[in-house]
Image (cartoon, rainbow, N blue to C red):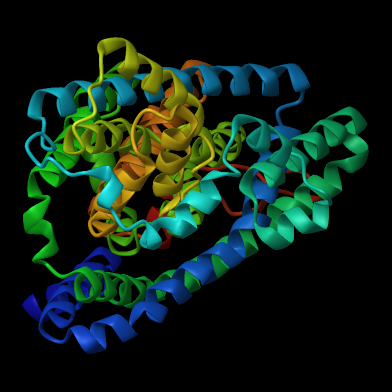
Length: 456
């Protein structure tokens, strides 16, 4: 019996990822030469996931919205989502601003910005030149639909998906077979995701081994105070702000975190929330959030609802100001907050995108020296894990909140999903079934968890 229990435990994804992370830390610390060479393992896993993102996002948005029945309903859901995103992003920026002013980790470093070698940040400063508000808005529209899918630009894909969905809505029943076909295609893509997720422990192993080998555990010591402040702020934001939202929705925060534990561990290893987007789409629908909300809110949240990145931006900017002895008045800090409400958008799930957003913020204000970014290069990967995990939790909570707001959250199914996940049952997407009394196949949405229970 014990052997069976051990075998069952060892076969669960989160245990495998924990083993991969632990092995990666040990290898990276004791054999850094080998650890550095393992970076392709993490990169390969992320590339496999990115390969699936464009078709999954397109199909999810189109199927979800096409079945809403009206463009007005789509607009209502989108407006509620954007309002929620903006409120949460503002609160995250304020949280970061308050904590960094209380802890003051950069005070006393007395660094002369003119003596800093900026060679290591040229890539980020160059990218920041194209991170203006105008460029952001212009880049939403792709030069071609094929180009948007080829480059995997999430905002461009969402825009085209919305337009295509509205067109299908207007055509009505004539295009029902196309929508059903896209739904079947989506289930096939989720099947590919389940195959790829078997490689998650290897991806996490390679990603964390490279991080430790490249920057070393010793790197953490010199900036420990800033790192602790960022992690603590993210924790407080999740518990206080997101916890309050979850209480309003009637969903236990701890239960939700246990439900997505696999995804949290993968993000910890890869420092990229994109690596788990397909899996999150499945899980959010499985726990009772309707497809029409999940397909619109979750992918959009990856761009517009980066709570962890927002926290990081204000804390990192003020830290550089403190370290280089730049006097920042309350007014200056409010200006930073308003600028970052814009620059925090568009850092869609990609590892390192928050650093580019920070560079864009500093470049647009001309108050804090851009060269101060060099101070964060060594620890950015470690800070990235905190903001990525917070971003992931925040977008999951956002999907739940908008679903509750729309009356599209099934709390009974949520309870069954949590119970099934705790029992080690896999979470699967809704499977198409024949509608009773008809001779045509049509996807319907029975409880996934009931289906799992029946299988077992």
